[in-house]
Length: 389
Image (tube, rainbow, N blue to C red; front, top):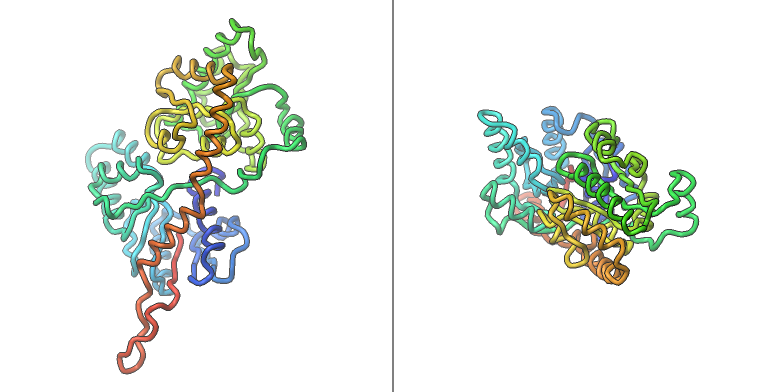
């Protein structure tokens, strides 16, 4: 699992289920390494190793065979697969975003584009219930695939509990000063590095901000720190940094553990997240849990997630991003107001609240009654067995 994306979702949902539900039998189907990352769980959770690549045809066949052998009553598939499962029991599915389908639709026409669309539609239509991680994602599913609104449930994501441990200590600050040589004020971006994340425009906005700050004689040593994927696969970013003249002021740190990331969130002057598309968008919420001012996009799910606690910008307007950064950096009353609002906004989302709603839906699919000799029904409320892909 990575610290970003579906792995974070699975880890937090399963851990929270482990705290809330000691009655239901859960089978965790997947690669042993990923299941191990979840950590200790109560005795009603059983890991079932599936070693095949997750999206291979053999993996789908093995998955179905295991679900049938275990007599599962319900399967929760934690992200959108386009290959129909044909499972022997109902399944519910979490949809994080429609980005893969949207990008393929733009790039693929003809047979393969249509084939991908039809498979995805079949998977969604086959789900007993769909969990969308935001209202934005729910509307996207309805609009693209014509799924009835009553079959889609909005169940929000939340931040990892490790971001809720309070502010960074002196020891935490010393760690990033020594290990990462960070002893200057900085803006922060954390997340994947891919075209829809809009990192190129963010670098251009930072370059323009440095020019403005020179005029103000303010923050001469301000840096931009980018945490996420290895930048080697994104040569455009290096070229943008050089072209913008900020090669001494932009640092790419790659992946850092959550324990270190929370210190960066805590120390950042501003968290900047100008993404063009997010199904939910966790990083701004993680920054808000530390009271860090956030500048983010006014598109997709982001306004829904950040509420009135962030400054919203048009993500394709470099100078609008720059002006927002300039204002938030220098306006201390605004920073204080954003800090208070950030704490309140982050507190609206919790894994316990979200997983309780998942459990309510699980319980709408009770176990089939056992039949005793003579055709009499035994307990209709034996423990439901849920498989989690």
